[in-house]
Length: 126
Image (cartoon, rainbow, N blue to C red; front, side, top):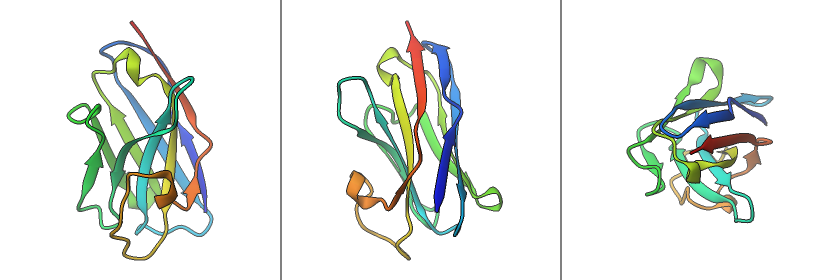
């Protein structure tokens, strides 16, 4: 499975961006998908995740109410809609996939995922 993240860029505070994560290779619409980010000088942190069924979503407290994770199974693509962006949202955003069938475990840690995209830079100016 290969994951390709895109959609990053430079935006002013209060603006919006939509990140995409396209999956290729041995794909399935039953992956648990996650987004993480890494700010300069900081460790990579959890941002959002969606269960394999699409019925459950999970968000870091810092983005709850502003970010929305979703997917288009026909396109094998996951999305992260980011609204009301703040300078502290700046970082490299990574998408990740957990391909374990009917996975119901944790989604908050890097080790919960099997494949990673290359990252896309998001910069929010004040």
